[in-house]
Amino acid sequence: MSNRPRLTTEAGAPVADNQHSQTAGAAGPVLLQDHHLLEKLARFNRERIPERVVHAVGSGAYGYFEVTHPNLSHYTLMKLFDTKGKRTEVFLRFSTVAGSKGAPDTARDPRGFAVRFYTEDGNWDVVGNNTPVFFLRDGIKFPDFIHSQKYDPFTNCQEPDNQWDFFSYSPEATHQFTWLFGDRGIPATLRNMDGFGSHTFQWVNAKGERFWVKFHFKTDQGIRTLSSEEAAAIGGRDPQHHQRDLYAALERGEFPSWTLKVQVMPEADAPTYRFNPFDLTKVWPYKDYPLIEVGKLVLNRAPDNYFADVEQAALDPSNFVPGIGPSPDRMLQARLFAYGDAQRYRLGINHTRLPVNSPRGVQGGARNYGRDGAMAFDGNGGRHKNYEPNSYHGPAQSGDATGLGVSVTGLTGTYVPVRHAEDNDFVQAGNLYRVMSEPERQRLVENIAGSLSQVSREDVITRAIAHFRNADEEYGARVAKAVHDKRRSR
Image 1 (cartoon, rainbow, N blue to C red):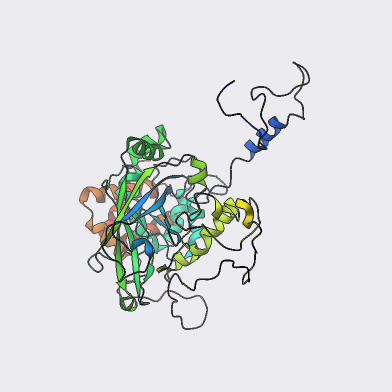
Image 2: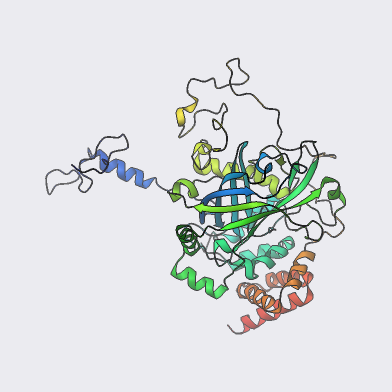
């Protein structure tokens, strides 16, 4: 008798033969009564869940966050940061944005950098990217932007015409395009890139004072990047290069780490700051608000099952804990709805009860009155009451808000954002170009021209180049010449 565990059906009954179907005699047809065969094939047909519309190609790992700052209580009452040396379990999911499942993870694309902190007050998710800015400042444009980047409804291919046509009418994307087509557009590994919360968030301290805050995860491995040619060669040989590199490093005991730093703006500074501090296409220069070290994030364990943890991970920027909350950032406000709704569609209403999504740091786990729905498990609340208020000692509200309310005035409607003294769509893109070395500028121009020169319409090319000229005249002129030379040589 083998010591191996018995193979069973989904109901737990032993499977007698997993090599041969039941048939009508040795040479006859397969029988409908073969329950194990039917169950196995039916389950196989349903293995795939809807993939993420964006960020479908991903990798992930577990680890911990350790506080190194002696005291942040004057900024926030988040318990996560209340003691130097305190450790909190984390899960980090990396991803590309535009590619569908199976696309190379070495593509030139922003990288998702989504961190879940399993805190004692519940899950806190920082769902950011490896760039401090984004293409847009208003979530109402996001579906159109992604449609322009994904597959064309006729050709079923990613089309440079679509990508650059959208950009040519969206000058606010110039800063992010300069990041994307620069050296950092393709990290050498997931371990060799920074991560950012990107949005502005609010911190609240015990006195009820508010600060605006940005999160920066600085890689301790150093920045390393790939050229377009290197990425194409590596991705052609191994589309899962970044995934494989991350897991291999964890297996070797080379645990990647990032130092979390923050920029903090007093609330009173925001109305008169030279840029709109809630504009996702802008950064806060370090000289205005220097980085403050908070702690270290370390990854030390690959998930035992990719699907269970990485594919089913449902990180949500609306997952706040007491001491932190949202800002008036229009992109963030849209994401507060969109991310949770996407996971309810992909995984079902009970996705928050999956192990990777459950609040591990909270004693007793999540306690609420949600019941039923597809895939209800863990007893579905048992015999406990499913309404509130009640007189049966069920969970009750704490009165602890995650952040402070934002003062609002005026009539409801659609408005252009309030302009600050130096608000425009090009100044920071130009600043980024001018701090690059000459070899970096040359690669940036070549990368842009390699894509823009594939566009079929001259008016789209002209509008796109105008954005780069507005950022920096030399920048635009070099892109124009490079595009002209590439088109003439074809």
